[in-house]
Image (cartoon, rainbow, N blue to C red; front, side, top):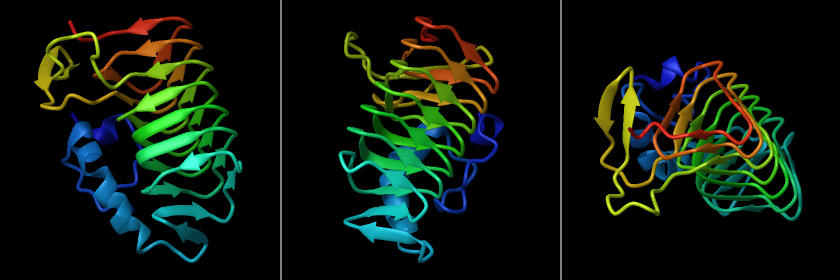
Length: 201
């Protein structure tokens, strides 16, 4: 599977990544890639303690952004947001009140509305998560924690115990829906409100 097939605006160059990497391989390298990328950002970014915020981004004073992170032009980060574990936000991404994003990439124009969790995931452009939707990254309830994904009927072992989802461009996810670990959503997918997406079988 190729990330480009799901996320057309994924910025390989800025993150110093090669295109042959699988999503979970990208996320394993994300923290180090962000630290490298931060050192070469343009002067419009303010960099402090491993967090780079573009001058046109709006960040609420109550938001907590932990290193490393890149907040691109036009982003909005609302009250009581927590970004941690390595986070990249593309241009004009919205993270609404009381959301947590961990070790993830959100491509341009996507919105995580409010009261959401997104863990260890790659979110395409123009994706919209309504209130309370969760992208879960860990099988707390299973003895075998390793995550597998299914692509066109083929099972792929990730060899990781934390991976949420890759969500294709322009996907719409309804309020209080849950994406189980290892979810793969093609471009223009629709997930209904309260729906559980579990592709583990």
